[in-house]
Length: 422
Image (tube, rainbow, N blue to C red):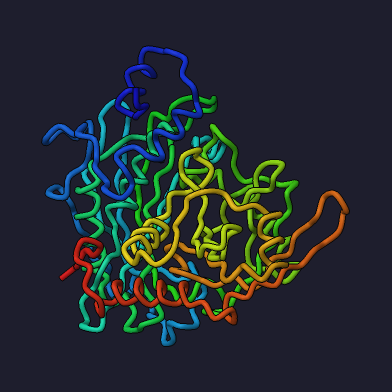
């Protein structure tokens, strides 16, 4: 029998013990991430189960509440600037969801005993609005972000909601703050939906109160390197995720433990951490990205390889899925979802079979990797691998980058991937 959330939920309610690895995998892959089918759990006009766009209340910011817009979007630091308005909606176990609101950005007041502060009951998503060459504003596959958010909410014991209703409300937010969407081909409006447990009770238990809010703000390049290759630091003595854990969910608790190693990475001149798993040192993902290797495999075939989703170790990225869809449509080389390892990568470099490594993610789209710094536990030494992403002669990453950016900005037609805000 196929293990899905639909099968597991009744078992959970009855108190039946289940295999948590199957639970994590089911949450990560149910409904097929490509198709994004959502379970029909929402009852019409029942605020116990969801909030509704038709009930949205909008309070426009006064002139004195509005922020000055940046002059140079390309030089913006990621996440340092916010647009004028935000979405807010509260939930309680007793009454369900309140009416959603769009208000001027303001502080959130919480009791110091709120669950989010003590047990990291929190999740978030990241999506972008792009101003196209035709001046129309586009979201890139937002239904996938919202579907992933709902799956993370289920794993976090946070309340569910109707994804279509949230997307409609986000559309209103972007429309209201449309002048914050940069008039630029290298900048965009980042959108951060978030949900936290807010009930002021200590004790590890299901939250009885929650808050969903959405912020937005203009961003330039995620990395200061721009489109130049980044460097990654890999230390097998640290892990990000494990089978049966929550690596495939966008929870705040997945990110706090990575900050310390990020500081160590910066000491080696690296922008991010490459997370490894297992004694065979499988490459899993980078701090803010999924990872792809393009090489000539040991059978002499050109192959694009990226870690799989079936064991719940990595985040099911939207750009990752888009890349896989595109290269399978090209049908020019082998495409595999399996784990490359550090020994395999080292051998491919030595034999000049490794052509490109690149990362994918909403914040970066695609970014080349030019260097990996690896701490060898056996020799207690630091090894450095030069990755020929930009000078191997291969252009797979560049073609993918141009294709996805062209779709996001309206130069290339892919209507099933685009949500236009008029």
